Image (cartoon, rainbow, N blue to C red; front, side):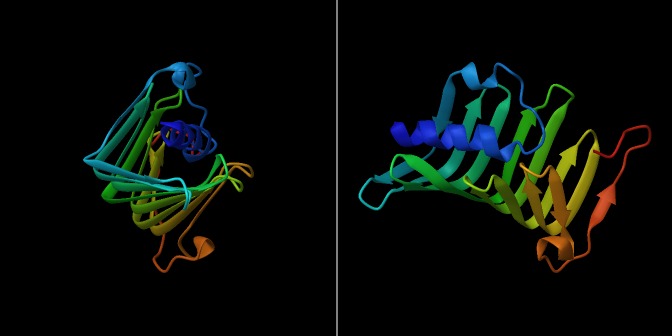
Length: 164
C-alpha cells in the first residue's frame, strides 16, 4: 500500500506538468485496479499489470502496465506502458489529455516523456509526435527533433483558443 501512495503522489505532482490540477484532487481517495501486482521491496520496484486503472479526483491514468522504481522510501521513476497509455485530468480550465505507447516520469527532474504515437491536448489544442517531453519546472513542451524524436511535429490549434 505504501507503493500505491508513492505512485499517486508522483502522478499528481509530475504528470500534470504545467497544468494545475483541481485543488481538491489530492484530498480525494485513490482507486487502483489491476489484474496483478508484484511488489519487491528488496529491489525497490513495484509492477502493476493488466488493465491498470488509477483514479484520484479528476485524475485518471490507464495503462497495460505501470512500473515504479524507488530509492529508499521515495519513488524515483514511474514507467507506464500501454496500447495506449491514457492520462487525463481536469485543470480547472478543461481537461488535459495525454496518450502514448509509453510514458516515463523522472520524479527528481519533474520531466514527463511521452514516447510512441504521443499526443498532448491542452485547451483544445493538440501536439502530436513520436516523442513529447513535458518539463514541469521550466514550463516547457518539446516535441519531435527538439525532444530527440524522429517524426515531424503536428499541431492543431482550435480557432479562438490560445496556444498554451
